[in-house]
Image (tube, rainbow, N blue to C red; front, side, top):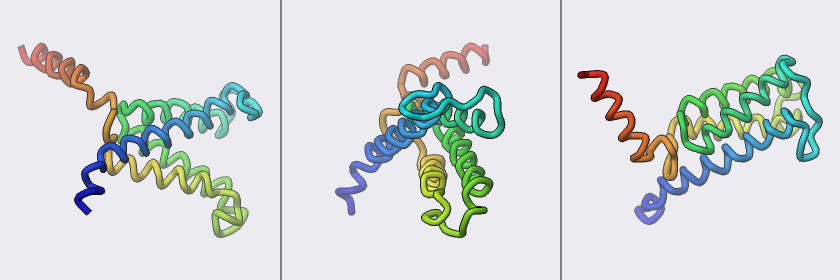
Length: 140
């Protein structure tokens, strides 16, 4: 067990990066009509807003900036999509086409609870140094 725990931070980081990339790509494809996906009309509820959340939230998770909050928002948006779009079709995700929504929802929930793992920008010493200097300036 100790062998697997040694790489936990890196595996969580890799998981965050892959899930964030896939989610952001899904959003970009719908917002801009690329990668074989039809473009969604701007500002139309809920499709355009879901795509905007996918793009911005996915990029934030991918980069590791505000990871827990972004992942929680992404998880909630996918749970909403599952229950409002897919659930009415049938009980199980395999029957109603909601596998992606359910998997993304739980993947982001896991990231929200585990944190960003390795290689997150929010863990960067440069960002932490900036935060410390801002706190020091505010207290003067």
